[in-house]
Length: 266
Image 1 (tube, one colour):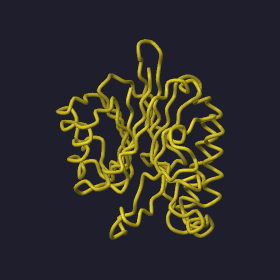
Image 2: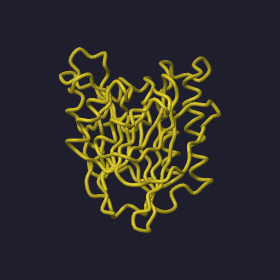
Image 3: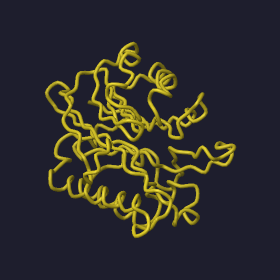
Image 4: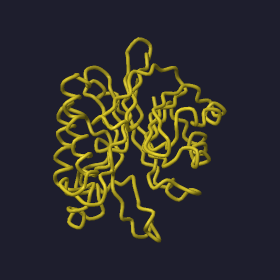
């Protein structure tokens, strides 16, 4: 089973490159973040034309929004409202997989604004509170019992080699020590496997996002690994391959994120 995560930065605007990706790579399920449309406005017909007929959508007008689209039947399990903000930042589904259930959680963690100080930046405070609530929920509800995948734009690059310069970004939102610490608590709460680093050693650079602000993103290569795929321990022996489609950053009208795909032997 191939599962892709991709912050698409408006699914309707970028449907042409979504279609290109699905035709060329054909994942079984694709998890999108920042869909930026209400549920009724989601481009269902475009996906159906490509053979993707099953949907779990949690959208809102103009902002945020997450979706899971699949070739296989799936059951919508939940859309959690973290921090009681009313934001569409989570959706989860279940696949039967011949009697052995598989659960996928798709997240869009708040970006956190520009200033890494919760006292003067409400967006940063929201991000930290969101992470605390994630950790509490994962531990309390035993979220990682069984076969579980958590994917999404988590908006944190936790490791030194997840950013172009550890030293330069220590005070930049997405790589600050407090964010890394809180994301670590989320990982520890579920004993999650960082599947991307299962295939790419921690000593090697690994990015999934490059800013629109760079005049030549490829030449400067100032990237960050903001997108993640985690697996519960029950899936440890099923992990086969992982791929970051870096070239998608050069596609026509691209997202600033690229697709990340994991292959599981289930």
